[in-house]
Image (cartoon, rainbow, N blue to C red):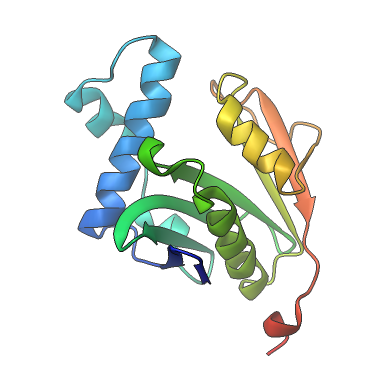
Length: 169
């Protein structure tokens, strides 16, 4: 999927660029949570619980977005059930924020979710991740009741997916 200077496409979870983006994602969210920069060992430990098979077809998808050819955003989705796909690891590098990458990323993830048969999206996040929360609301996500629990789940969002002509193949 291409938007202005953004190109967002499926990419294997473990490619070098996908891995660098996931490391940057974890460093940022962990650093905000702890109030200090995350160490390399902490990032490694946090990513160890990130098995790639959960974000690959037929049960999920991982995408990487490039801005001007440089990898600058990523996100994944996994099917929770036959109807609902959960967004995870949604990240836009700080240098690329405000350029339309978040919208391009969500559009690509929605397209991928429809391709997996999802009719709705769900996600959980933390209250302090205000940029992400603003992005979700801007793109039609609404607060929903909690569907999961965990130490980093403080607010939940959902969105109904509508079929697009291009998705009907």
